[in-house]
Image (cartoon, rainbow, N blue to C red):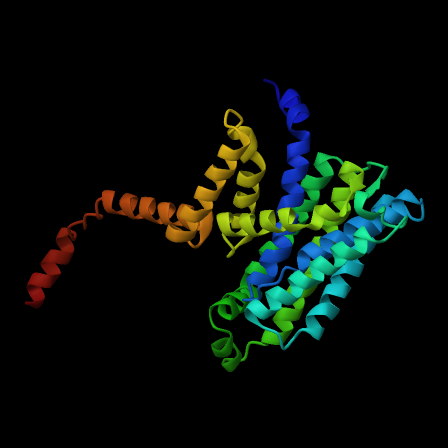
Length: 309
């Protein structure tokens, strides 16, 4: 099988993988600072419908619509985070879930503007797999900056213990606001790419099925780094093709068992498993290398030491 034939047969899967990765990243950037927010899925819906409306009605070009979606969703998410700065934990998760459900109701009752319960169709398809992969690489580059250096140390500390982090001078509120800004921007980007790749969007696109997928990717891959989200997105996107000889119910059972096993024995996901295996291999390699043998001192040095004695 040539590369071109493989690409032609898997282009839709590649696009789905990229959008799934971006959507899961909109959740991971907030979880990295210890915030459980599902608002990224809501801004995914906002980005999808807003881009679809303006492109379908030929108001602005598709590239401008994508950029506008990133900026507007990022700012709206920042405002949303500022309004909920006192809400924590599961309460924040419930509030953001309610936000997603409200957006679904608005989309389903939006009439001709949103297409109602049937959704919006006929949006010009201007995005293909290379553009989605490029957008994913840009987000990965931004995530590398977010997870390294001073910001990376601060987010690691906040995820572990927010009170202790605040006591040593870390601005928890500022880091939380930045995470909401990034979450909304990435969610808006994923939504724009989705509608411009498939030409349609419906209220179910941001429903419980997509919510479950987003959470599953983060849990299976690992929430500590973008690399874990990438592993989870690859597994979730390509698992149906790997298990093509199983029936639908069997595939769901296998995926469910995988989540249960990882949740019980690998809370850090596949990334944690690979990190543990890599550490074990490095330890074995170090033990297998013999220690260096010390060279005997030269004869002149032995003579000088004997004279001193």
